Length: 432
Image (cartoon, rainbow, N blue to C red; front, side, top):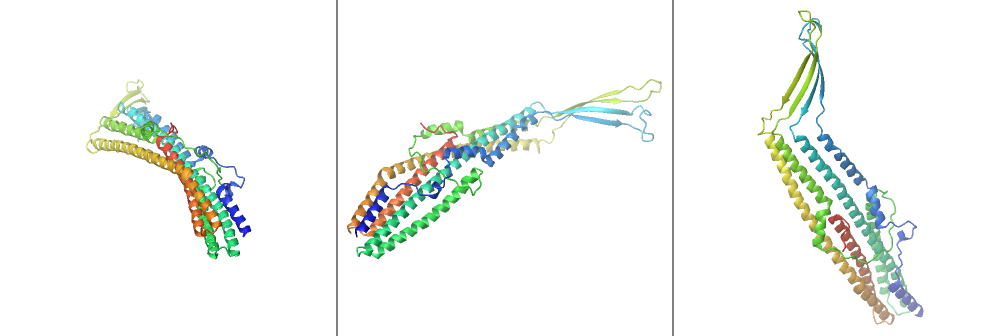
């Protein structure tokens, strides 16, 4: 009997004061991956970001090309060569001609093409920044999921140890006739449930580890170990109106959309310029051999050329092109308004999630968990003197276990809300 009570006392002490992390990943000697290190790695190693950066570089090389005149043409001709003799000097009209010609778009067209391409290249640059923000957000989200799962596994493992202590206590009391066999069976059942929950958590952690490894361009079999502790304070954020003003100025998504809208406007102007003709100019030098009938040598000839396109099918070509470009511009305008709405909605939801998570963390930390610990201690004391049945002790312990898990879940979700908020605003200056 005394031996059993000593074991109960040891279990109570372990329940109230044990906080040492037991998850295997914390004990394997691997260097922990901090969230700052993960963010630094993703912006340098992610292949998706590298791919879109290369595309932006390709688009940046396009404006100069579109703003340059078409390549001139050099021509070489044999004109009026008689087929009976193929002699270059038999006929006076025979000449060897070297020519040069250049296409000249109507004034303003090249500039509009170049400006539209520059706007699209700028939009692509903002697209790179937008993807960078999303990758940082995703890395932080997955990192905090992993952190929560590690803490949940620690809680499970601590509770498994306590359940083993409870089983020993129940067996000791049962062996001396002071307890019930159903208490032993109940404790064993709860221990089995904890093992089942551990399997689920480890599976979830494996999936999240694969996600993070993929984002960091690491092998999916790589072992990712996170720090066991982080600062548990919560910063004060700017209010919603300030954050929305910041987002309107700093969010790459909105800046990219504005550049696409500008490119669409320039294309409308270019389509309207197509009502005007394009030109071509050229010159040719003709070399003639042989002599004139009076005995003088034949003079060489110079030719000048001028041409222009005739935009006469305006109803089916230019008019329709202008309609198309106007529709594209309106589409970009509506898309910009939609992006603004979505950004504001994301900011509002992230702020709401952060405030709710912050309040829940504070409530669990200062109220619910201490009260649940006191309840478990009281139940254990009552069980010691046979005033509380074992079922109520187990219920109190399970409740405490659930609250500890919910605390870390709320904590990680609040941190994820900060990550979503920073990505929605477009910069880290979201704190007061």
